Structures are given as structure tokens and as C-alpha cells.
Length: 284
Image (tube, rainbow, N blue to C red):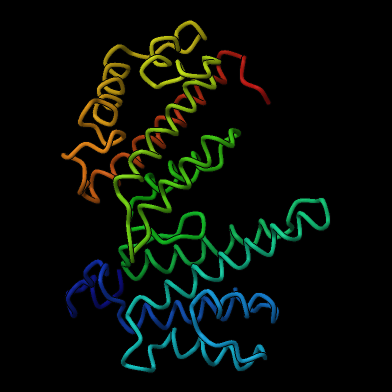
């Protein structure tokens, strides 16, 4: 909180969800110029992803991005700084994936992703944005604890679990066309995958309902109330009218349901992994 806000000289700033004030816009502009000074190849990828014409030089492409970041044209929507930053993350990730395939070694830009994420999230928090960036995408989740749970679950030692969490996050955070129903499906599927990994179940019997019943056989002991809660949550998504069966009641699942499931399932996945580690049977 600023000096003026602390002393009541100006009204405390409200959380910015459907707009960006000039201060936040300028700080995001500065962050892009500080952390995203990129090659012509990546600049082209960013411009292309945003649907604008490539100007063939880095300097000219920066002029296009500056216009979007500063909303020089009245027709530019308020959220363009978020779109520009997401595009940089996507282009950078694509570049790294190509580098891995060509050189057969891990991308050397891991530190870049971590540093830029921390820097941008610090700005968003200070300027009271209603968004934070996770895995290169902006989501309207403010709590640091929630962010940490999702990030940890999406980078677990298990590819199947990571895939479901990342997909749930992507479907939930799509501002233009969010898909809350399928986000919920992916969140609960992450828990299902983790439970099946622990129990070794596969095939038709590898469902969350069955796997929960056999966790104790693998040394993972859950409190009865917690186990019952997730059995009921599984029923919420999988009974005849459940969201995984396209039930009528879930055709318009609200954002708060998807947010709750994403956070809760991420936290439960992390909890299960810790329990599994303690059994001594987790593969390193």
C-alpha cells in the first residue's frame, strides 16, 4: 500500500479484474521491455500469435507491441498487455521445445521462466491486479498459497498428473472462451491419475472411486473424513448427472466451481505425493 493510501489521502485501489489502470499498464510495459528483449524469430512468433502483421525487423515489431501494450488505439482492448505477455511465454516455450528436439538437451531458459514469472507476479500483487501468472498463463487467482499448490502439482514427477493439471488450468484461464466443465474434469482426472499411480491400477478398473479404496493397500493412509470427501467429490463429477457424463446440471458449470476444483485437486495431488514419499515406494 502506498504512502497516500496508508494515510488516507487517496482511496485505496480496488482489485483490478476487468480493467488495467495507467500505472499497472506502464509497469507491465516496462517488464516486457526489461525481460522480453528477444530475437527476430521469437518476436515474429509473438506478433503472429497476436494476429498482427510481421514487420520483418525487431524494431518495427516492437513498435507494434508498444502500441498494444500502451493501448494507443482506442480499438485495442484493455487486456492486451496480458495477451502480449502470454504470447512471449508461449513463443519462448515453443523455442525451447524446438531446441530440445534439435540438440537433445534440456532448454537453458528455465531460469528465465522463473525470474520473469516472479517479477511480473510482484508487479501484479503491488498494483492489485486480480490476476497472477502460472505456467505462462494469467489466472484470476490471487492467493499465494493457491498459486503455490497449482504450480507444485503441475510440475510433479508424474507426466500424466502434470498434463491434467496444466490442461485444467488452461481451460479455466482462457479469458475469451473458458471451458469450466472440462476444466473440472481435468482437475479430478489429475487426482485419479495420482491415485492409480500409487495403487498400480490400470485398465477399466482404474477409476478414482476404486483407487481411493485401495490406497491403504499401498501404504497411503487417509483420514476417513478426507477419504469420504473425495469419494463424494468423485461422485459429484461421475454419477449419472455428473459433469464427466455431460449431465444437464453441469452444462453451465460456474467459474467458482472450476476454480475450487483446480485448487483443491492440486492440493490433494501434492498431499498424496507427500504421503507416497513417506511409504518409501515412490520412484525417484
